[in-house]
Image (cartoon, rainbow, N blue to C red):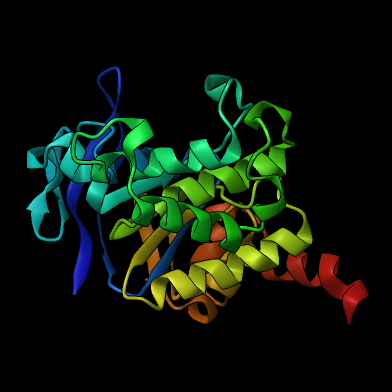
Length: 256
C-alpha cells in the first residue's frame, strides 16, 4: 500500500520550478532514498512531500489524501521530518526529554505540556533509549554536540509515531557507531509497517539501508530501482558526472 505518492509534481521558489514533473511512491514498510548532486531538488522534494512547500501543479497524496487538504495538526499525526540541524538554540531551557516530548504535541488533545499522559512519557523514553540518549535525557539541549543533537531530533520524530518519516541528511554529524545504530533503527521502524523517505549524502549508507533508490537530476527522477540496480546503472554516472563505482571501490579498497 502506498503511504506517499507524488503525481507529476512541479514546485520551487520565487516562481521558478526546482521539481519538474516528478512522480514516485513510497509504500508501507519501505525505506526509499533520494540521491543526486547538490541542487538537483532532493530537499525541495522532501519539503513538498510533507506539505511544507506548496506545489504549482500535480499532487502529493498521503494515505490517498491530498496533503494540501490535510489540516496541519492532523498532518503531524501522519508525517514527521528530520532536517539538517544546526544548534539547539531554539530549544534553550529545555532538556533532551522535554524536547523529545514535543514530538507528542499533536497527540496531547488540548492538554497542557505539564499534563501529558503516562503513555506519552513512556513513548518519549522509549525513543530516547532507542537513539542512545538515556544517560543524557535530563541534560539541557544546548549542551549537546552536533551528533547528540541530531539524535535528539530523530527521537522527537519517532515520538510523533507518524506513518512516514522524511529524513534530510539524518547521518549528518553522526559517528560511525551512531550511523550503524541509525541503520538498525530505521530497519526496525519500517518493520512495523511504517515508511521512510530520506536524503542520504553517503551513497554507501543509502545503498545499504534502502529498499529502493531514486536518482535525481534537474528536478526529475531519472532512475528508480533496488540499490544494486542503482549502483550498477549508467544513470548513476550520468547524474554525478563521474564513475561512481570506480571511486567508491578506490576509497574503500583499504578495508578489503
